[in-house]
Structures are given as structure tokens and as C-alpha cells.
Image: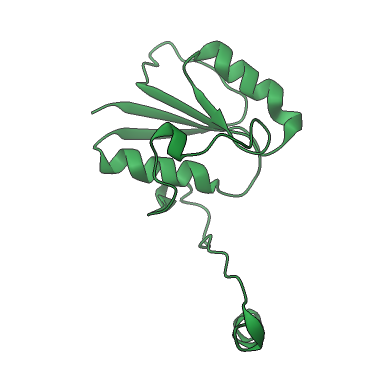
Length: 128
């Protein structure tokens, strides 16, 4: 069992990639810790794996700061490198999400895709 450190480097909404990474590692028996904002390293930090996610290119300096603190950190997201995938890091791209990372966020993060007039009608009726 290891200790996984997740960095939510930007954005206000829950990060789906980090939620998937957390679910994967918890299923393996690892402990998972989420931190937000500007990276720092605490004296007692000894993570076995570090992941960081950036949505915006303006946050790239935060990714570089995280990489300086944790040289083996795996960074991804549209603000870092869109070609990096969860699968490349050994994380399934489908499966459960760990909502416990964001206990104050009351909504689910599903994104229905309307297909045709029947589904569009259903989606509209659920929204109103």
C-alpha cells in the first residue's frame, strides 16, 4: 500500500481525471490525498506517487513548480499536455469516480449527450 498525492492545480469544479485516479488507487489499497492550488512540499511528505492536473495553460507555472518539488510527478490535462492519457499512467479511462475527494460538491458530474429528438426532449424535461 502506498500514499498517492493528487494536485488539483486549477479550476473550481471537481476534476474527473483526479477522481478516476483516486478510485483506481483506493481500489489497490492506497491512501489518497487531494491538495489544491499552489504546490508545496511538507516536511513529512513521502508520497509513493504524485499526479497533477491542469486545465488552463496559464497554470503551467504551477505544473512546473510541482515537477520541481516532485520530479517523478505525472502531469496531464489540457493546460499541460493533451496527449497524456490516464491509460499511459496505468489508470483505466473508464470506471468509477471517487466523489469523496470533493465532499462539499453536491452534484454528480455526468454529462449526458442528447441523441435525436426523443433524447433531447428527455434532457430538456429533466432540466426544467
